[in-house]
Length: 113
Image 1 (cartoon, rainbow, N blue to C red):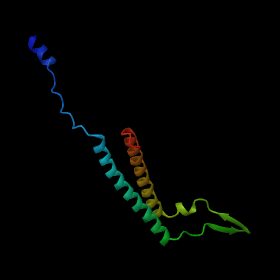
Image 2 (image 1 turned 120 degrees about the horizontal axis):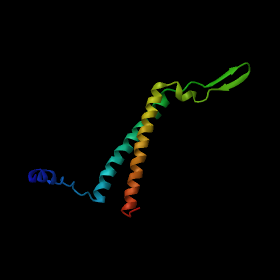
Image 3 (image 1 turned 30 degrees about the vertical axis):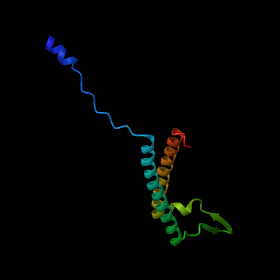
């Protein structure tokens, strides 16, 4: 009986603690990630602008029986390559904004903002 009780009551060794990261170190890592995300967003925005400068959209206006019609959102739905580029730009913008928000919270926590 005694051996069973010892076996069940044996303590597990404590897992090693991760090294403590100071707020300044966290801010430095976050700043690097933010700058990379900002560069990705700028590159994606430039790619969208470059594509739009080269590939002019078709005129969404049409005339039928003397009445003029405008296609709503026609500029964005017809071009699949533009949709892919714009989607990449929006994804980069979201990532950049999340990191910017996280950075602001950390600076506020550190009482630097």
